[in-house]
Length: 102
Image 1 (cartoon, rainbow, N blue to C red):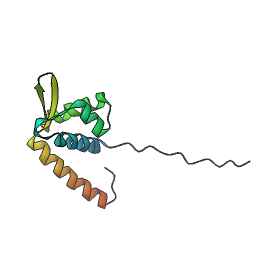
Image 2: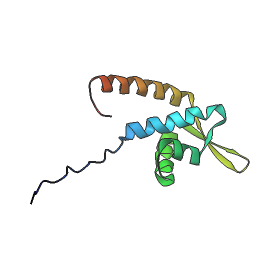
Image 3: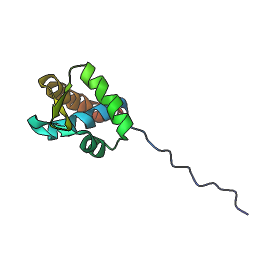
Image 4: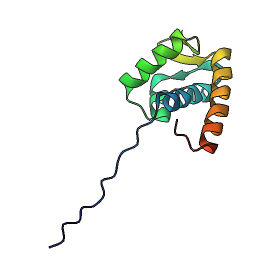
């Protein structure tokens, strides 16, 4: 009898930086009018609760704003958020070239 184990597949979790980049990217895709929470959750592949928690941090940092239009709550990226997203992309490109996971 062979006692060889199949190697377990380790699930790789995304870093907070990666999640923030995904949220900001989704907000940027929403344009100047903003994007609803479910669209961010879907595009960033996050549960609603996790998305709200991360968005609150981005709001506190001034990277996104909330807008209430009729009965919809929209998340809108700020100019600071756009700048941060582009700088973050540059950093991720350098990290990737150096084979650093972020």
